[in-house]
Image (cartoon, rainbow, N blue to C red; front, side, top):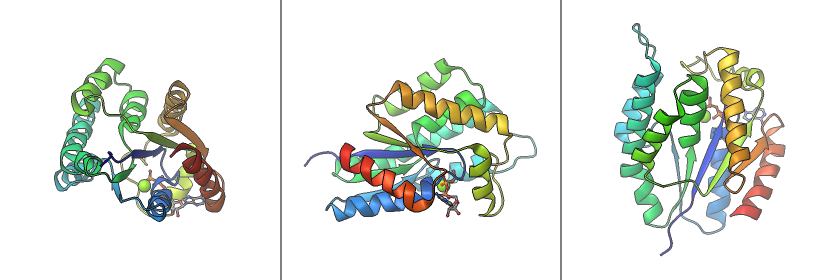
Length: 206
Ligand SMILES: Nc1ncnc2c1ncn2[C@@H]1O[C@H](COP(=O)(O)OP(=O)(O)OP(=O)(O)O)[C@@H](O)[C@H]1O
Ligand SMILES: [Mg+2]
């Protein structure tokens, strides 16, 4: 049996990743594929526990290296327990945030050096890369307004606008550097219009 495909959804807060991950899974299932939806940080019991730690507000704060290590610890657990077994049994995996989020948030956002990100990526991913990465691009102000409609903001959603702009730019730069893997979608449009873009991309790329 052939290996499943790894499809990752990336982009800033409130861009529509979670909303559209369901549409993508439904589309793949309609093609007769076996599909799982998962997310990062999280996606296995251990990784979800680490997610709780990363997103919580700690009186002592969380410094950037701690955040980086926790996120990659969660990713290692997620890969071993959920993601790799699914790909190996032939299921497609739709993952809400993955490796590009680390480069965007901990790299560009927090300012950690590329060599630290690369070392973590080499250790934990060991050459794995998504088959397709959908980047939901939106102005941070608009994404944040949407996320606010959902309730309390987490540590990342509460970051300043300059941080969010660095995150956005990092995603765009990574997409430009890997056009065979990444597609940028205009996530500021209405849900049905984003879906239309998405369908075209899935039909041509998968
Ligand atoms: N194109 C759109 N137009 C208007 N509202 C949208 C659109 N896409 C999503 N939304 C709404 O905006 C909110 C945020 O969307 P969603 O949770 O899918 O974003 P997200 O990218 O997963 O955010 P986060 O990074 O915070 O998890 C939801 O309430 C969703 O219904
Ligand atoms: Mg989401």
